[in-house]
Image (cartoon, rainbow, N blue to C red; front, side):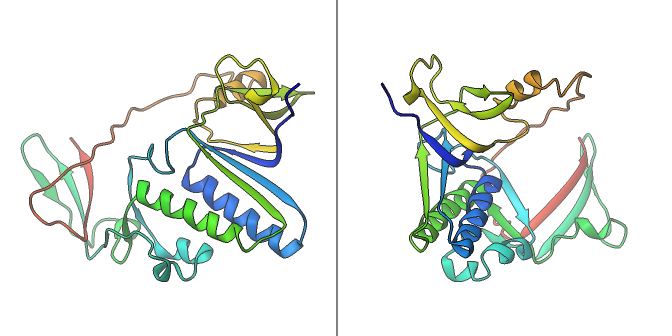
Length: 226
């Protein structure tokens, strides 16, 4: 009979939020001295391989978790030195003067990032941090996706990692399980606990990666219209 695989904390998906959460738990466990186990399931062949977004991020967020992130070879594409906002028309754009658009849209000094590189870096930092904490076990699994949520006695007990789970080795259990609210398996929780009696309103977005002939390093645009 297969042995039950169980952790204290199970994080489904190698997202920035899950990796930061794991890092934070590592630090808390180190401070408390209590034994703690964490598992992260990532469906890609490596952390970051399923992330296609760019980001413009305020560096103060990073400094809260990694005060010395620049010394740790954090992957920065550029620092924003030219922040713009434009309205797109059918044939041309209309630039909005900086004095007229909200201050929150001025990204001067923010970091321009490729999230796939950031996620890979964060996973590496997590592994390095784990070496310092003897009382914590952390396992990072790549190539594993969650197929459904497992419920026991009315609570989330873990996930199945194969489509037709039939034995204990097809499941990963945990005292606490976390995954994205718009993730594939979140529908199991929504249906089980009847969290969405009313239909949700959706909008559709498109992610694109552009390769430009000219050098736009450090330039950020916010656009409205089409």
